[in-house]
Length: 472
Ligand code: HEM
Image 1 (tube, rainbow, N blue to C red):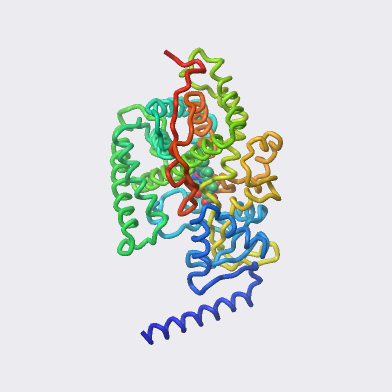
Image 2: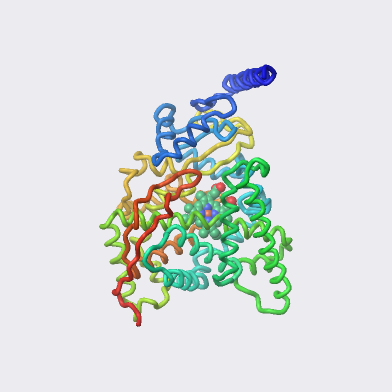
């Protein structure tokens, strides 16, 4: 016991000397590094376990300003709530900063996932992904499937629905369809169940012996990779005989880059993760915010009823021009992304000593560019903590200064699914509000840890609307 105590004291002393050397050598941003080793992790996690995590950042911003130093998840971290600094971090990806995910996430995603790729290969694969999810592809190919699959899902709803669960199902099925042209069925649902286990493993210690969740996640990852490998092999064989399929897998196989099965599987696995929780959370929160704001809901319904009024029947497929006419819907989507984005910011690592705003970020330190802190700052958005979709009508330019409003990040790692996500969200809202009226089945609370969601998956009671123009 005495030996353990001796080592703890020695390690603490070394840690404190090391820390004060840093403070003397560099002009670090102000802030506290908290306790040795654990830093301020406990304060961060405790704040995020309440229904109002904002004070963790608010308190430090008030005391130190928008750039401060903290120590979380085992590492000293420079935290930025400053739009200019966030933009600097995003734009210098690969030059001064590189992406940095916790071990659990990197292991589960696989080294060939776009989120972990670096350098020239990242550039190439990012643009390939962008080219597959851009407006003209969505307009000419994807919109029809998005609309059809959303309608198919909504058809099966009756009475009590766990909205967040249904939203996840919809987004997963859509991504599977876009990646490899599979319609929803038992295969996609059993794959989704494995995915849920993989994602749970993201937020645990990457030590299978200590964490049952992590070892379950590793097993699930193996199953997902096996299932995807079978598909890739099958498609390689087919590509010689059968006509090429117009999907992401087809684009990867035809790209001329000679990707291995493992590369393609890691790549697809990560794409399924990237769009899954993000889009489905925004779908659920948009409905929650609209439920709590009857005026906004009435205006949204009117916009969508007008689209239906031009059709012979409610079930007629949506066209690109319909999507383009959903102006207020875009305001609702923007505002939901501003208030409740599951991606609150991004972690990077400094590749060299970096001077910014009079401070130095030492080489190797973690940096967290907080989008959420900027989005919820009243200096940038009036009454920032109130859901107000009309702000986007009055201030359309709010979307254009990319450093203030960045729900999809920016720079070389700008989300390649940003347009796709907007279309999916808009089509979902269209089909939902024209088809159902609803009310919350019970009280539900926002939860922020380990991810932003609602505690009970937002149960609602849905009632079919007879109008407008229901089909016989
Ligand atoms: C509301 C929905 C979504 C939000 C809020 C969102 C947000 C983001 C953000 C902030 C990033 C930047 C991460 C970083 O800089 O490290 C990102 C990256 C990414 N997103 Fe999305 N995303 C959404 C939907 C989608 C969808 C539908 C897809 C599927 C195509 C997708 C695929 C990706 C990928 C592959 C990356 C990694 C890009 C890279 O590292 O180069 N996202 N997303």
